[in-house]
Image (cartoon, rainbow over all chains, first blue to last red; front, top):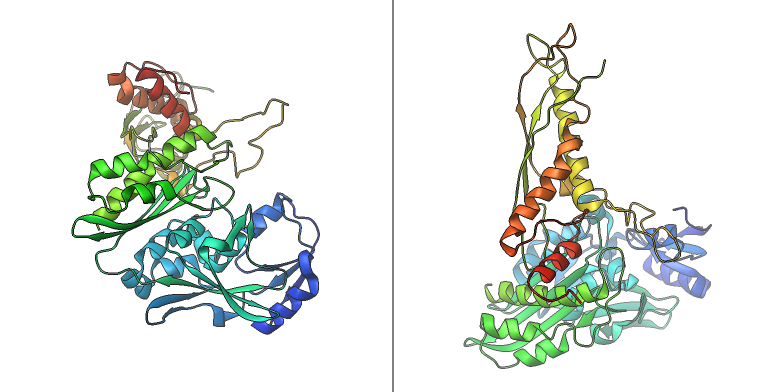
Length: 285
Length: 163
């Protein structure tokens, strides 16, 4: 539980962070709250030789109503997101999921940018952001660009971020009135990763499902969309029976891990239960 | 001088059949003992703390704690990340009751309380879960009651093997 040796540099500005990180290429890693990266370093599953600390770049710690969407600064803490008035009004799913992360100590340090940049398929926010079709704002040596959630999460702990890139913000849509949402996290203890998690966004039109978007936590190498469930619900009447039957397809296209918290088979079965519960809760909102 | 403790526990548990877990919906009543022949506990706060802490340690034994090895003998639950010690977030409300029967085998009439909590709570929790599952014909289940193990037990009882 002791990390490999590393050097430490503190960025004094965003430009400085990009410069420091690009100097170190593959060897450098940005650190903010450290709630995802440090555990991996302690297990020596991650061994960056240089940590560039961006934790004090307070200009990245905000939630902003940007008209048609909400922009969340990468350094916004989970604890702040959980009680943020703008989010609670326009996108309560992000607030609720942020409130489910770890325990209070973790939530006061952990940042939304860190959770996304880490690309951990067992993290709560990545699957939520995927279900919301969020956009990721990235600053690199070539300037600023945005990447949609559909292509941001590339592989196991791998995102669209290149060496020298800093994730500066996440943009999430404002959920229209009448849009249902839910985040179902199933875990043993507060500090444990989700055995399975399900994020659901449910748009209805006159009692029928207009569009369902479902994100799955810890069901594969990346956060995943439950595409088969989404397709099965398209246009059908929003009833418990419809949810139950569509949820049976939750494990389709997934490859959940087996570990001491649960077998792969168990995770597949639980994903059905949790997708159904998420849809039912979403429909009740 | 060692004297035995008295440790009846009462546990209520609410199950969720879909996920097969006790979901920490536990209510536990444990007695506290260890009193002088006349008067109160030697130190009531210490006795309460000892009992509550012990009860939760017992719950950990019932539900969370397990040493798991892989086929090569490698310990998989080697850190606090994997080995399930519960924290305050997992602790249910524990009601500590009183039951006073001074010991007759020593001059002070005292009894120890050290293991009062730990001894009975694992058994009480497991029995409560078995009671909750008894409509399915389930009469025993192995510790610790991980959600997957409870789920598999339910699957088997409902006919068919848990694949």
